[in-house]
Length: 507
Image 1 (tube, rainbow, N blue to C red):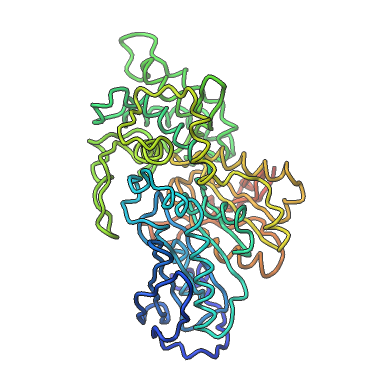
Image 2: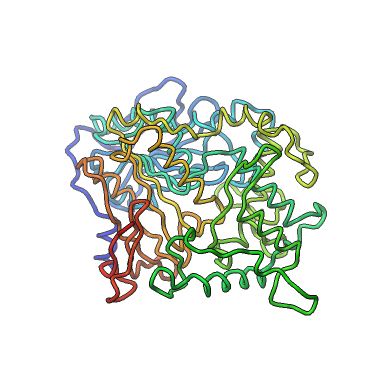
């Protein structure tokens, strides 16, 4: 186990420093619009100094400065609507490996699925949209330069979900902030994400006064998953419960439609329509608004029930206070319902009484323009980021029921259409059987922080990466390669199926 952890989270050689590293307020400079609140020394992970502060009026941040600094900075992104200081880089062993690291609450305090803080508050919306991450990055780099007596040599950002969108925003709007960015399962087109979620909610919960259970329940989700696995699981050469590329499966939800009242292993017309909405994506009278979801994750603990179906009787804990801050959220049947209605009420229409069940999407594209201009990270032109040597690594789980994998693939392809030479500086990895950011039937653990560091410092783009399963949610076990898109992992025909060496990458 220790050897495995060292391989996943390698310690790096510390650099020499002229700083006293005494973790006192006097060790840090006075910066404009920055108030430092506290410094404290912590002995875990080799020892580090924690600095807490506020930028402008309410952008809170934390900066961790390890005793054995490797000379580099790694900022971690947040999830959902954030609302407390979040730093996913710590999950990749940033401080243990010697990185100075920072996170931010993006300028508000709230439950991560509660957007009421944004109602009629353009300053908070802009901080959340892009300013808070940028200001935290520049502030953290200035503070660490004084503490260590030198500037960081490489600067990285790593995030998933909202954090993935933050990474794309940095590459597009603030290309000088980071040398390498990892953007996992990115949330980068907020109005259209909301449109998708609302149209699914209209089918799953047609009565806004009854959010107890969705039209599609656990039994129907099991039926759907078993049907397409029976049809397609062996297409990739292995019957292992993992679809290597869902696009290769010709599953049609209408084949499960009931043909008589006596049938039980089938879906009603209403249930078929609800699943067609899930797989087909949002539309208005002008055509497609956003992408549907691939098949996958229907029965996962962190899959469809948590994100798209469920109901208040199944997801009782989803609105309860989180550990950080003790904030609760409005009652919601699933996470996407909370996110999408929150965006509509508080970011697009600024109307707390807005009703998802009656909205017809007429004029939605125009209504969403202002919010999109602040929140969206959809620009595929990354030339400024790339010209200074920037590298972007994106990844997405094929079974993600929170954010559609098809949207990430489309954005990646737009990047290459805009400039085909971007293929040297941008990589996308699709992860079969993986849920939102982590977990699922597929292997989901890759230390992307180590990968981006090796890419930036060597200049050599990564090829196949080894992903590991997690036993009990924490213990790395088994492995399988994930391949640069559009390649996929192909079983060699022999060898253990949970060993990466038994596969090769191919188109």
